[in-house]
Image (cartoon, rainbow, N blue to C red; front, side, top):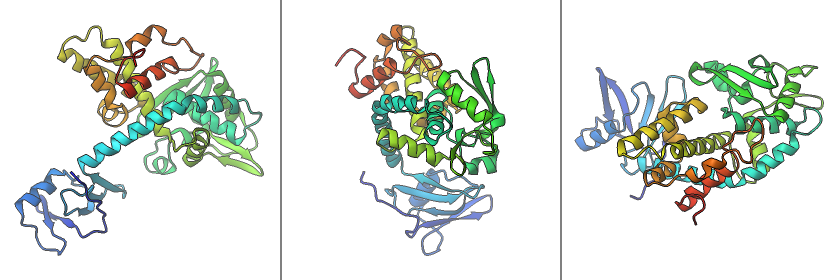
Length: 345
């Protein structure tokens, strides 16, 4: 289907409360009487709590509905075909980023060795944590509205040093209490310096010294640093998406020898999504829908996994760095790109 690029400024249907349900008005403000059009709108399942709802008059509009949620945020419902195309483009972009990760990690390693809490050392520390701990980036708005924290909004009180590691304890998304431990020595040295810094800098954990004052790190700072090192647009969510994909690929490879029936394979896929959810702090459904590359699951169902690399898991390992980095990532990238197990071209 060829999609029409719709906009909320186009003439659209409106939704009004009517008894316990809703009625719909056409762009002229008259009651909508076309049963097929009404059925199409109901099939969109627009959340009842949305206010000021605009509904596209075209069934092939890429944007189908817009509304304001109870928190005052504008929300959007897109055509399923458009969502599928966007998801595919997202995962292709993440694969491109995965190919550049070795260069990004090399730059981060170098910048972690800077003396003092320079901008690039502090941003390198933040990126290393994204790469190790699967943090969300965080935003001031979420902290103010929901009292939840992400990497850039963490306070110094949310972390402490313990037995050569740094432990983070903080309220995350949906109020979940999250505990994450980082043992990577260069990162721990930077975090210790941030925790012990003197001369102000506020309560935020991440701040760098740039004369004449301390500057709090923002999500935009981290994304700009990532772009500088990678040479392409890259965000914190791209890290989470790639790590989720690699973890799922490893979990499915481990289960392959015993998952011989279709029902066993379905259980293995559910377990893999549950394992990824535990790391990311999302639900298994969200992990499967938004983070795990669907090609990993499709290939698993065809009998293609990275099982051949499992005996070498951690061969290039560094203390404090996940064993899935390095050869396993390369194997997952090869598998997705070629549709074949590692070692086959």
